Amino acid sequence: MYHAEGSTTATMEIPRDRRSSMYWIDVGDGNVHRSYAVGEGVRLVVGSAKASDIVLMDRMVSARHCELRLEDGVLWVRDLGSKNGIYAGGARVDCARLGEGSCFSVGRVACCVRSESESMESCLPLPGVVGTSAAMMRVAAQVRRVAKLSIPVLIRGETGTGKEVIAQTIHALSTRKEGIFFGVNVGALPPSLAAAELFGHDRGAFTGAGQVRKGAFQAAEGGTLFLDEIAEAPLDVQVLLLRALERKEVLPLGSDRHVAVDVRIVAATLAGLEEAVAKRRFREDLLHRLAVGTVQLPSLRERKSDIGILAEHFLWQRRDEVGVKRLTPGAMGRLMVHDWPGNVRELSNIVFRAAAQTDGEWVRARDVDVCLAARRTTVGPLSPTAAEALVIACRGNISIAARKCNVARSTFRGWLNAGKSDRKKGKWPSERQE
Image 1 (cartoon, helix red, strand yellow):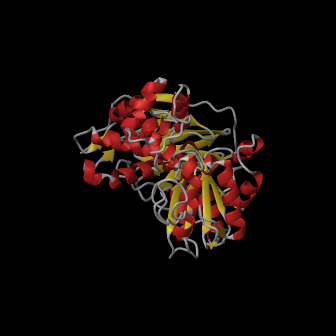
Image 2 (cartoon, one colour; image 1 turned 60 degrees about the vertical axis):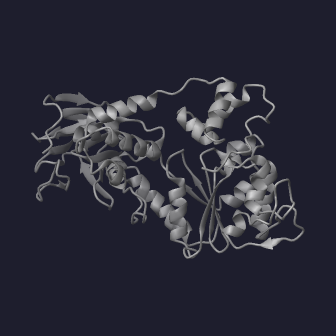
Image 3 (tube, helix red, strand yellow; image 1 turned 180 degrees about the horizontal axis):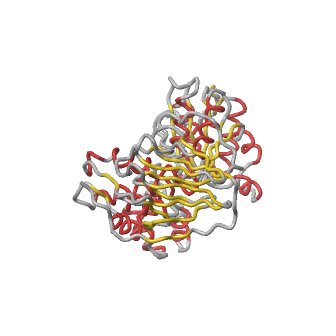
């Protein structure tokens, strides 16, 4: 049986200048979106008892766990003597003042506050996608609108937000679902080989081309071609991509015959393509061709009510490796207060590392603290020689080398490019797609 972490509690106020006559509480519990309105003078009891206004099924939640009350435009959450407490700002509290964007946890359930002015899409969650927050319901509505159409789709979002997962979902909900889903990380392709990888090549097209090879467009025939990190495509390849989109045909390198292709393009970017267009690094006509349909993915900071169910999902996924593990309410409180610059990917890594280092069933707050502290430590700038040695040790994969240093791939490339080398700056023949 789990015992609460720490017996002391404190009153904690999270100041918010803005007041409202109505707030909505998004509850991350279960596989459907749940949102509850709190109006002026309204009191909602949160607990596991069926008579509660907000019923939570988590066994860490007491029958009458806490209450929410809106008084004079100020929203308060107050513990009702629960066993495992409520957490806000990473600490266990007796009472906390909340406001728009505030988050707190009850047991292992994440709850977030939004104002009445925010629009809310009415839509079922997406199959295979974990998350029922208001932000993810908006994504679900966007995905369902574009999935049934044959138009190209551009997915925008920060690193680690799950762009490929959404691309796979678009494919699964489309009329091409029986066809292949073929993904290419454009940013990981050596510029000299990008065209051959995408459009194929004939025998003898270049040194080492010993046989005819189909490119990604032909490999995805009848299905969906996912182009990740599309902003990294070289300008000469962008011209060929535009032609393929407009004419639905490709010209393999070394060939004089065009090949008709039937593919649906879904591209993804974390970079602002409009800014790249302004700097002449990306073609404006290609941007318009790709962004016929768009899906904007929220950062994990914008969907914190999903943290609990995401964490439990990741623990279940890795149960064969780390055993059956569960989060304590304290651990959940720590996860809620982190900013998650690496988004869902970072959450997955932290949860796995915390679970791997504990011998018992429970992942506690201190386990999460240790892992978060380790993630904040990044390797300082490496010399060009050291950076090159690390890439060689990673068998030429710059992405893996960058992850080992806990820095962005562009940062690591900068370390490589800072030195004088016989290689063309930042271009590694053996660099492979992740």
